[in-house]
Image (cartoon, rainbow, N blue to C red):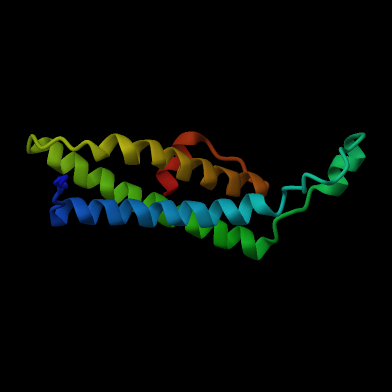
Length: 133
């Protein structure tokens, strides 16, 4: 018989993972709102010129854009909390492997927030975007 090796997860790790999952869910919801309405079906004909492209592309409704923006902001908030927790742990000498994981995921949340600004017709710098979260 084969013995299974079990891995225990302490409550701190469980909390971090659940927070990361929550942030990813916010990102997924924001992405679905922002980009599902602009995707054309694969069976549709290929646009011949710029006028056809404009006809095929749908705009995101203002209310939907607000919801997508809120989801992106919530994801950034969670990632900022995780970053602060990791910084505090690093000061105590407790480096955490999950730091790299959510650092890369934070880029997705920032990109979604930037997409919200762009679709709203606003311009923002990268630093301003990060500080607005």
